Image 1: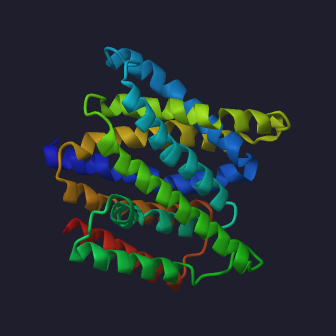
Image 2: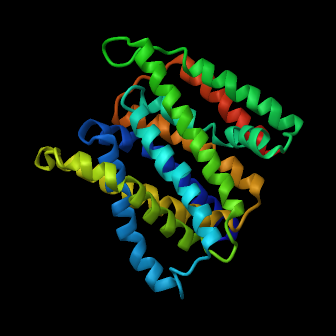
Image 3: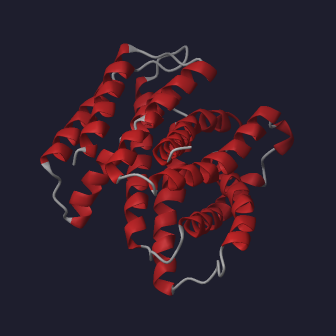
Length: 294
Protein backbone atom coordinates (compact mmCIF):
# COMPACT_ATOMS: atom_id res chain seq x y z
CA UNK A 1 0.00 0.00 0.00
CA UNK A 2 1.41 3.48 -0.89
CA UNK A 3 2.71 5.37 2.13
CA UNK A 4 0.13 8.19 1.97
CA UNK A 5 -2.80 5.81 1.53
CA UNK A 6 -1.54 3.70 4.44
CA UNK A 7 -1.31 6.78 6.66
CA UNK A 8 -4.73 8.09 5.64
CA UNK A 9 -6.31 4.68 6.29
CA UNK A 10 -4.81 4.50 9.77
CA UNK A 11 -5.85 8.06 10.65
CA UNK A 12 -9.38 7.42 9.40
CA UNK A 13 -9.71 4.17 11.36
CA UNK A 14 -8.44 5.89 14.51
CA UNK A 15 -11.01 8.68 14.24
CA UNK A 16 -13.84 6.26 13.37
CA UNK A 17 -13.03 4.34 16.58
CA UNK A 18 -12.86 7.55 18.63
CA UNK A 19 -16.23 8.60 17.20
CA UNK A 20 -17.72 5.22 18.07
CA UNK A 21 -16.63 5.63 21.69
CA UNK A 22 -19.60 7.88 22.50
CA UNK A 23 -21.98 5.19 21.23
CA UNK A 24 -20.41 2.46 23.36
CA UNK A 25 -20.02 4.90 26.24
CA UNK A 26 -23.76 5.59 26.10
CA UNK A 27 -24.49 1.84 26.22
CA UNK A 28 -22.11 1.43 29.16
CA UNK A 29 -23.80 4.18 31.19
CA UNK A 30 -27.06 2.23 31.05
CA UNK A 31 -25.49 -0.76 32.83
CA UNK A 32 -22.55 0.42 34.96
CA UNK A 33 -21.97 3.23 37.48
CA UNK A 34 -19.46 5.78 36.16
CA UNK A 35 -16.46 5.07 38.39
CA UNK A 36 -16.79 1.30 38.08
CA UNK A 37 -17.09 1.59 34.29
CA UNK A 38 -13.98 3.76 34.17
CA UNK A 39 -11.98 1.40 36.37
CA UNK A 40 -13.00 -1.60 34.25
CA UNK A 41 -12.05 0.31 31.07
CA UNK A 42 -8.49 0.88 32.23
CA UNK A 43 -8.19 -2.57 33.78
CA UNK A 44 -8.96 -4.09 30.37
CA UNK A 45 -6.64 -1.64 28.60
CA UNK A 46 -3.82 -2.39 31.05
CA UNK A 47 -4.26 -6.12 30.51
CA UNK A 48 -3.90 -5.56 26.76
CA UNK A 49 -0.91 -3.21 27.07
CA UNK A 50 1.18 -5.19 29.56
CA UNK A 51 2.21 -8.02 27.18
CA UNK A 52 2.84 -5.48 24.41
CA UNK A 53 5.20 -3.49 26.62
CA UNK A 54 7.05 -6.60 27.79
CA UNK A 55 7.48 -7.76 24.19
CA UNK A 56 8.43 -4.52 22.39
CA UNK A 57 10.03 -2.29 25.06
CA UNK A 58 13.55 -3.08 26.28
CA UNK A 59 13.18 -1.41 29.67
CA UNK A 60 9.47 -0.57 29.91
CA UNK A 61 9.29 0.51 33.54
CA UNK A 62 12.33 2.77 33.73
CA UNK A 63 11.30 6.44 33.72
CA UNK A 64 12.64 9.54 35.47
CA UNK A 65 10.90 11.07 38.47
CA UNK A 66 10.10 14.26 36.54
CA UNK A 67 8.51 12.28 33.71
CA UNK A 68 6.50 10.25 36.22
CA UNK A 69 4.90 13.36 37.73
CA UNK A 70 4.16 14.76 34.28
CA UNK A 71 2.58 11.45 33.32
CA UNK A 72 0.49 11.56 36.48
CA UNK A 73 -0.84 15.01 35.57
CA UNK A 74 -1.42 13.85 32.00
CA UNK A 75 -3.33 10.77 33.21
CA UNK A 76 -5.41 12.83 35.64
CA UNK A 77 -6.50 15.22 32.86
CA UNK A 78 -6.91 12.75 29.99
CA UNK A 79 -7.81 9.49 31.71
CA UNK A 80 -9.59 10.53 34.91
CA UNK A 81 -11.24 13.89 34.13
CA UNK A 82 -12.06 13.13 30.49
CA UNK A 83 -13.47 9.64 31.09
CA UNK A 84 -15.44 10.59 34.20
CA UNK A 85 -17.03 13.71 32.70
CA UNK A 86 -17.73 12.07 29.33
CA UNK A 87 -19.47 9.03 30.81
CA UNK A 88 -21.38 11.16 33.31
CA UNK A 89 -22.36 13.61 30.58
CA UNK A 90 -23.65 10.77 28.38
CA UNK A 91 -26.19 9.99 31.10
CA UNK A 92 -27.85 13.32 30.44
CA UNK A 93 -27.23 14.15 26.79
CA UNK A 94 -27.34 12.33 23.47
CA UNK A 95 -24.41 10.51 21.88
CA UNK A 96 -24.92 12.63 18.73
CA UNK A 97 -24.32 15.87 20.58
CA UNK A 98 -21.52 14.44 22.72
CA UNK A 99 -19.74 13.35 19.53
CA UNK A 100 -20.07 16.79 17.95
CA UNK A 101 -18.92 18.58 21.11
CA UNK A 102 -15.87 16.33 21.66
CA UNK A 103 -14.72 17.21 18.14
CA UNK A 104 -14.01 20.74 19.38
CA UNK A 105 -10.77 19.50 20.95
CA UNK A 106 -8.41 21.30 18.48
CA UNK A 107 -10.05 24.66 19.21
CA UNK A 108 -10.08 23.97 22.95
CA UNK A 109 -6.35 23.25 22.78
CA UNK A 110 -5.79 26.70 21.24
CA UNK A 111 -7.83 28.31 24.04
CA UNK A 112 -5.99 26.41 26.79
CA UNK A 113 -2.63 27.24 25.19
CA UNK A 114 -3.51 30.95 25.20
CA UNK A 115 -4.91 31.07 28.76
CA UNK A 116 -2.36 28.88 30.54
CA UNK A 117 0.74 28.96 28.33
CA UNK A 118 0.41 32.53 26.98
CA UNK A 119 0.76 31.50 23.34
CA UNK A 120 -1.28 33.92 21.25
CA UNK A 121 -3.46 32.26 18.59
CA UNK A 122 -3.18 33.37 14.97
CA UNK A 123 -5.98 34.91 12.94
CA UNK A 124 -7.18 31.58 11.53
CA UNK A 125 -7.27 30.08 15.02
CA UNK A 126 -9.28 33.01 16.42
CA UNK A 127 -11.84 32.71 13.61
CA UNK A 128 -11.98 28.92 14.08
CA UNK A 129 -12.54 29.27 17.84
CA UNK A 130 -15.41 31.69 17.19
CA UNK A 131 -16.90 29.21 14.70
CA UNK A 132 -16.61 26.40 17.26
CA UNK A 133 -18.39 28.48 19.91
CA UNK A 134 -21.16 29.27 17.43
CA UNK A 135 -21.35 25.60 16.45
CA UNK A 136 -21.68 24.43 20.06
CA UNK A 137 -24.40 27.03 20.68
CA UNK A 138 -26.30 25.74 17.65
CA UNK A 139 -25.94 22.13 18.78
CA UNK A 140 -27.40 23.08 22.15
CA UNK A 141 -30.44 24.55 20.41
CA UNK A 142 -31.86 21.02 20.40
CA UNK A 143 -33.37 20.46 23.89
CA UNK A 144 -35.37 17.25 23.56
CA UNK A 145 -33.96 14.09 25.11
CA UNK A 146 -35.91 10.87 24.84
CA UNK A 147 -39.70 10.97 24.95
CA UNK A 148 -39.82 13.81 27.54
CA UNK A 149 -37.94 17.10 26.96
CA UNK A 150 -35.60 17.94 29.86
CA UNK A 151 -33.79 21.17 28.92
CA UNK A 152 -31.86 21.72 32.18
CA UNK A 153 -30.78 18.08 32.43
CA UNK A 154 -29.77 18.08 28.78
CA UNK A 155 -27.73 21.28 29.03
CA UNK A 156 -26.01 19.91 32.14
CA UNK A 157 -24.90 16.86 30.16
CA UNK A 158 -23.47 19.00 27.37
CA UNK A 159 -21.58 21.14 29.91
CA UNK A 160 -20.06 17.99 31.38
CA UNK A 161 -18.91 16.92 27.90
CA UNK A 162 -17.36 20.36 27.36
CA UNK A 163 -15.51 19.87 30.65
CA UNK A 164 -14.26 16.53 29.32
CA UNK A 165 -12.91 18.29 26.22
CA UNK A 166 -11.01 20.76 28.44
CA UNK A 167 -9.40 17.83 30.23
CA UNK A 168 -8.51 16.24 26.90
CA UNK A 169 -6.93 19.50 25.69
CA UNK A 170 -4.59 19.55 28.72
CA UNK A 171 -3.88 15.87 28.14
CA UNK A 172 -2.85 16.41 24.50
CA UNK A 173 -0.72 19.47 25.31
CA UNK A 174 1.13 17.62 28.09
CA UNK A 175 2.59 15.22 25.50
CA UNK A 176 5.07 17.96 24.54
CA UNK A 177 6.42 17.99 28.10
CA UNK A 178 7.09 14.25 28.26
CA UNK A 179 10.58 13.05 27.33
CA UNK A 180 10.91 12.02 23.68
CA UNK A 181 12.78 8.93 24.92
CA UNK A 182 9.44 7.48 26.02
CA UNK A 183 7.91 5.78 22.98
CA UNK A 184 4.26 6.22 22.07
CA UNK A 185 3.62 2.55 22.91
CA UNK A 186 5.16 2.94 26.36
CA UNK A 187 3.29 6.21 26.90
CA UNK A 188 -0.02 4.54 26.08
CA UNK A 189 0.76 1.74 28.53
CA UNK A 190 1.76 4.12 31.33
CA UNK A 191 -1.40 6.16 30.90
CA UNK A 192 -3.57 3.02 30.99
CA UNK A 193 -1.88 1.84 34.21
CA UNK A 194 -2.18 5.26 35.85
CA UNK A 195 -5.81 5.56 34.77
CA UNK A 196 -6.52 2.21 36.42
CA UNK A 197 -4.80 3.30 39.65
CA UNK A 198 -6.63 6.65 39.75
CA UNK A 199 -10.04 5.00 39.38
CA UNK A 200 -9.30 1.94 41.54
CA UNK A 201 -10.48 3.22 44.99
CA UNK A 202 -13.81 4.61 43.74
CA UNK A 203 -14.44 1.71 41.36
CA UNK A 204 -13.87 -0.81 44.18
CA UNK A 205 -16.29 1.16 46.36
CA UNK A 206 -19.00 1.01 43.67
CA UNK A 207 -18.24 -2.65 42.90
CA UNK A 208 -19.05 -3.70 46.49
CA UNK A 209 -22.78 -3.08 45.98
CA UNK A 210 -22.98 -3.75 42.24
CA UNK A 211 -24.76 -6.80 40.80
CA UNK A 212 -22.43 -7.98 38.04
CA UNK A 213 -24.77 -10.86 37.14
CA UNK A 214 -27.40 -8.35 36.00
CA UNK A 215 -25.17 -6.95 33.25
CA UNK A 216 -26.17 -8.11 29.78
CA UNK A 217 -23.68 -9.72 27.34
CA UNK A 218 -24.10 -6.68 25.07
CA UNK A 219 -23.04 -4.31 27.86
CA UNK A 220 -19.99 -6.50 28.62
CA UNK A 221 -19.14 -6.43 24.91
CA UNK A 222 -19.39 -2.63 24.92
CA UNK A 223 -17.07 -2.53 27.93
CA UNK A 224 -14.50 -4.76 26.22
CA UNK A 225 -14.65 -2.54 23.13
CA UNK A 226 -14.30 0.61 25.23
CA UNK A 227 -11.27 -0.77 27.07
CA UNK A 228 -9.40 -2.65 24.33
CA UNK A 229 -10.36 -1.06 21.02
CA UNK A 230 -11.03 2.58 21.95
CA UNK A 231 -8.33 2.89 24.62
CA UNK A 232 -5.59 0.91 22.85
CA UNK A 233 -6.27 0.26 19.16
CA UNK A 234 -7.24 3.87 18.35
CA UNK A 235 -3.83 4.99 19.69
CA UNK A 236 -2.06 2.38 17.57
CA UNK A 237 -3.82 3.46 14.37
CA UNK A 238 -3.29 7.16 15.09
CA UNK A 239 0.43 6.83 15.85
CA UNK A 240 0.93 4.66 12.77
CA UNK A 241 -0.62 7.35 10.59
CA UNK A 242 0.51 10.58 12.24
CA UNK A 243 4.19 9.65 11.96
CA UNK A 244 3.89 9.57 8.14
CA UNK A 245 2.07 12.85 7.41
CA UNK A 246 2.28 16.53 8.33
CA UNK A 247 0.48 17.91 11.36
CA UNK A 248 -1.98 19.83 9.18
CA UNK A 249 -2.87 16.68 7.25
CA UNK A 250 -3.42 14.77 10.47
CA UNK A 251 -5.59 17.65 11.69
CA UNK A 252 -7.91 17.26 8.71
CA UNK A 253 -8.63 13.66 9.68
CA UNK A 254 -9.91 14.70 13.13
CA UNK A 255 -13.00 15.82 11.21
CA UNK A 256 -13.82 12.13 10.67
CA UNK A 257 -14.56 11.73 14.38
CA UNK A 258 -17.82 13.72 14.66
CA UNK A 259 -19.07 12.24 11.38
CA UNK A 260 -18.46 8.77 12.79
CA UNK A 261 -20.11 9.66 16.10
CA UNK A 262 -23.23 11.10 14.48
CA UNK A 263 -23.64 8.30 11.93
CA UNK A 264 -23.14 5.48 14.44
CA UNK A 265 -25.38 7.14 17.05
CA UNK A 266 -28.20 7.43 14.54
CA UNK A 267 -27.61 3.90 13.24
CA UNK A 268 -27.28 1.96 16.49
CA UNK A 269 -28.94 4.16 19.12
CA UNK A 270 -31.67 5.49 16.79
CA UNK A 271 -31.02 9.02 18.00
CA UNK A 272 -32.53 11.90 15.99
CA UNK A 273 -30.37 14.14 13.83
CA UNK A 274 -31.83 17.64 13.62
CA UNK A 275 -31.15 20.82 11.70
CA UNK A 276 -29.46 22.20 14.83
CA UNK A 277 -27.02 19.28 14.75
CA UNK A 278 -26.37 19.70 11.03
CA UNK A 279 -25.67 23.44 11.21
CA UNK A 280 -23.61 23.22 14.41
CA UNK A 281 -21.66 20.22 13.16
CA UNK A 282 -20.95 21.93 9.82
CA UNK A 283 -19.54 24.99 11.62
CA UNK A 284 -17.32 22.84 13.85
CA UNK A 285 -16.07 20.74 10.91
CA UNK A 286 -15.28 23.94 9.00
CA UNK A 287 -13.42 25.27 12.04
CA UNK A 288 -11.28 22.10 12.20
CA UNK A 289 -10.33 22.46 8.54
CA UNK A 290 -9.60 26.17 9.00
CA UNK A 291 -7.33 25.48 11.97
CA UNK A 292 -5.19 23.16 9.85
CA UNK A 293 -4.25 26.22 7.78
CA UNK A 294 -2.62 27.66 10.89
